[in-house]
Amino acid sequence: MDYVDLHVHTTASDGTYSPEEVVKLAKQEGLRAIAITDHDTVKGLKEASLAGEKYGVEVIPGCELSVEYPHGQMHIVGLWISKDPKFVAAELQFLRDKRHSRNKDIIKKLQNLGIDITYEEVLEIVKNGTTVGRPHIARVLVKKGVVKDINEAFTKYIGPNGLAYVPKTKFSPKKAIDIIKKEGGLVILAHPYSLNLGPDALKDELIRLKGFGLDGMEVYYSEHTPEQERLYLNLCKELGLLISGGSDFHGSVKKGIFLGKGKGNLKIPYALVEKMKEYRRQKGLGI
Image 1 (cartoon, rainbow, N blue to C red):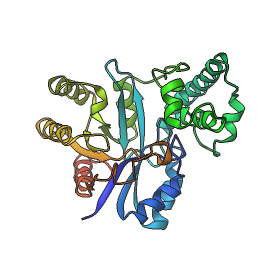
Image 2 (image 1 turned 90 degrees about the vertical axis):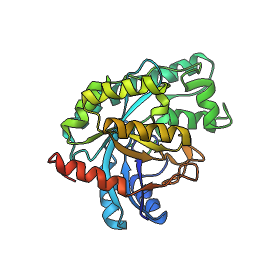
Image 3 (image 1 turned 180 degrees about the horizontal axis):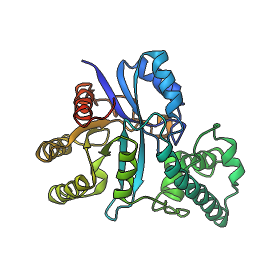
Image 4 (image 1 turned 120 degrees about the vertical axis):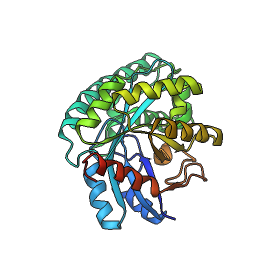
């Protein structure tokens, strides 16, 4: 059986593998297709597409948007967005500008805590074309011996409960869905467990999002339990949503999460991609 991974990150956002390296790894792992879904950027899509042709791996262009949500964390994944997504690129530039300001605010907070760190040190470890984010700040903190590893950096300083945390500017769910739809993409709710909702409340939320244009949901995910998978699968069937899945691979930033395998037992069949393609054909969308 052919397998896929529909939630993958690269150095274009906060992963540690370049787009070409990710595609090459997908080939080595025997994956038939992967979706490049970097946070709030589409900068890695061209490189990934060319690498897909080079290594014989189907590369689905995508992105992942963080959206406002009061109960937990909500992320929206777009799949099959335009290969030249000018509209989404323009919208995401706004978020990148806000992220730049946020990074500087985090550095200032760290400095106020007596930590010797500058924004220039963070920029020195960022590869050309990469969106600067908290993982890069974490790597500098590790390098300087402030913390022992990236996890401690997030827990103690730059995560949601950290001493130097600064909230991220986000779109509303409707705005994020509209952006993806304008680029011809499929809208997938990522890792629904992070919404922190019970079954009934999750169903209500899915109905609300479907009203905005939601097409599907990640059923198969590295952090989902078998019980959660069953619940999400049943909700997709009940509400007529597409079934998706992905590892959320970031490379060494997320240790223990492997491309196409998650924590070791993730197996996402290519049949899900075929169903998505048929869905797109029925709606007159390209594949």
